[in-house]
Image (cartoon, rainbow, N blue to C red; front, side):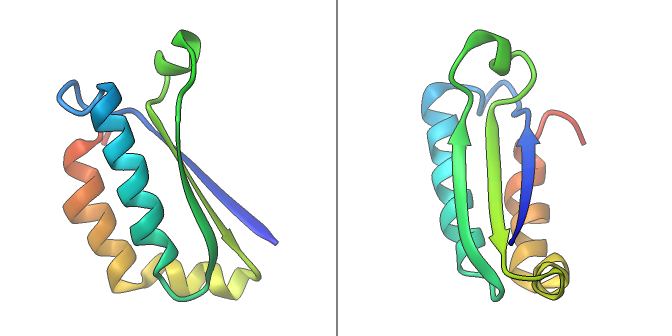
Length: 92
């Protein structure tokens, strides 16, 4: 099993309880639909120390490295990154 974890610091507009919840829920839903993904979760920082570094954690599980490569270049993953996540990320 391969676990890919990404921590994202959101822009001020999205770094709210509602924004974090929306991004984590959409991320889990969108990423779990991509072929090769066993499971996808969107998680929210739970304390001030974590929030200083990141707002949302996206975790995606795969059965094999081959599945990771399919995911990495899949059009739905690239659209999620470029069209949805990138505009909301504070660090690019």
